[in-house]
Amino acid sequence: MTVETVLQGVLMEIGLDLPDAQIGGDSFEMRQLRGMMNAAGVDIASRAEWSRLYTDWTIGGGVSSVALPDDFHQMAEQGAVRIDKAGFRPVRAVVAPEQWDFLTRRPSTQPYYHLRSGQLHFAPALPSEGALVRYVSTNWVDGGDHITQNGDSLLIPERLVEKGAIWRWKRQKGQPYDDNLAEFEADLIAEIKADRGEA
Image 1: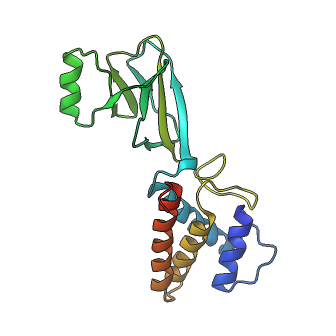
Image 2: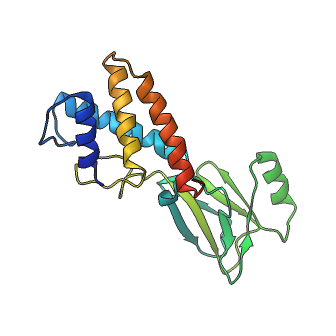
């Protein structure tokens, strides 16, 4: 599905008859809808590790730190970093800054990584094989982090973007939206489970 399909669903539900609507249009209604659909998309993308948002990143050997990509949101929950060689050699995460400071002063054969100030740090420095990193991207639209036109494809469930925009529209217009919000939240949980293969 594309943004056009989502937009038509939203328009039908909120009662706007705009059959040739373009999400990139300059009318007040389109600017509002675009903002609400983008707000819904950002919210949905940040609430789970959607499988279609995973990005694999290869880092060369011999480095002790690299800048995080522009589309970085968070590290994958499981096996986010591993040494890039045959087999699976995980690099363990260190969250606490004081623990990281200790580890950098006490060399270990066990590799660790730490996120700080927009950088991914390694201790010890990566071996020559480098590392493979899996992270969750902020790009929930195919090619970006917000919708701009009807032909954009979404990497998160389209029906959630539709429902998220609908309850936001109703709230902004002073209409009852509690049922829409509750339905959105229930569907969000169901979609997260389905994406993880738990449904």
